[in-house]
Amino acid sequence: MKYALLLIATLLFAAPASAEEYEKGPNGGLMLDVAGVDAELLTSGNSITINVFDAKNHTPIATKGYSAAVLVAGGSARETVALAPQGENSLKGDAKTAIASGTTITLTIKTAEGKSGQVKFKK
Image 1 (tube, rainbow, N blue to C red):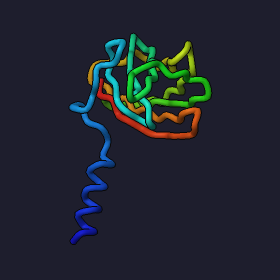
Image 2: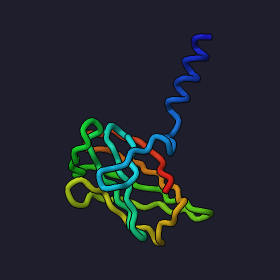
Image 3: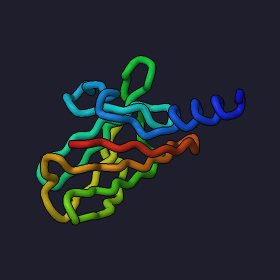
């Protein structure tokens, strides 16, 4: 019985983040914890920006050495967009079409230290 409860608890904590767990980022975007950092999602037209911050005090973290991609899913359309470091603490990429409201954006990120993770944003 102990093992069953432990397994259930593990699965619950391993579930992807939900909308209730979003924080408002320093730039007004949706922010979630992933791979030990806070990732803030910003979109404008077809441009996707992930700003990276320290999870404890929300100070910017340099993205040199980071790699990331997003899966943009809206309706039946799906597109993978590679993100590249740009500026001090940002990762940016462009989708083929504008990011519509209601789109799900799944971020996969690997930090310069080798930590990796994945989160889903619902725009």
